[in-house]
Length: 434
Image (cartoon, rainbow, N blue to C red; front, side):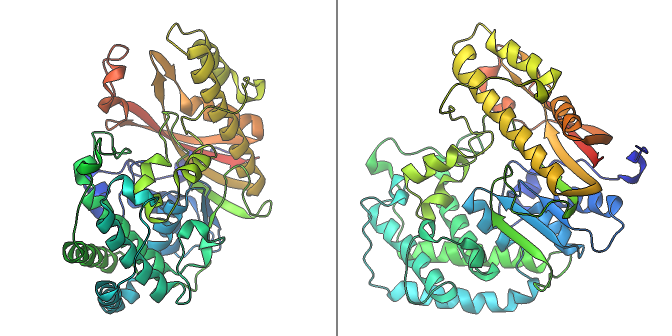
């Protein structure tokens, strides 16, 4: 195949800390920047009708970048909280003048609401006192009543199709997410994907309706500012398709995609469901439902239902890694950790097969992949992806490597006996379908 490396041009994909905290309507640890995504899309695509896909859409950086550049786009994720975030980001800045009035209507009704909610089993009760939970629910009910369904209120976990929610409804749900996250500041840890729970019920957060409303209003205003300062306005008549679906079973026809841009889940046992536990709690997901979701997510630290074995089609590098993990002297290496890694690689291989299926002939796929370590064993994930992709018919046409200083290893003291340098290599891998 002709070398196409010269067509790709892009900056370092890693989100800066300032962009993570302030540059978007919702911070997301595992992602790349919109600057990177837009630069790569511009350099790689010449067709105006090219369809762009992200099978691990997360907070929606690929889909918002593609939409801003006027390309049809699709994005899928199994986490319903991240679906709402991705959809909220698609709200056109032309809607900004309406946000204040809608916010005032939500707040006005929530303040006079006498609705009583049963908080005994509410998932928000993990962090908030009963009356605070009721106040959050009053705000949430008014978002639903005004922007989703004025006839009935129910937890979002009960909706069969969140895809019918408007960008505006998702926007105000994300404002409520941000409000709750701000209130949970006392329970943050050095791990950006973890919110601890209070040890005693008496340590739960108590917040009256008035301060909660002021924080909600402030979050809406800040989001409005970010929306209004976006580089370009989105027209929702564009072909934008977001959904809740697995990367192992993409709801798209074969050969229907021209370009894939994504960052697959890390192989560092990040629990992507637990990382959004407060958001899922606002959506009404119970502990049982969250645990069920965890078992479907790639990269989750859950144990497979039955022991797994490595497969030759995963490639030599992957199988070498798995043999070393299985033979490591540390506890549970030959059981839990081996099985968990097999589960990860099996799902990644299936997902790459789906990417191959939906790509058109000669279509391009660009993945941002980060290496890691198991104890003292190097997990060369970029090379593993290259071998897996080659076995499926995706040929590497370009690669760029960057140093990622902000890693999970840097904040995990358990890695210190095994490593002196906690940085990682992040690789942008660009493939073409043969």
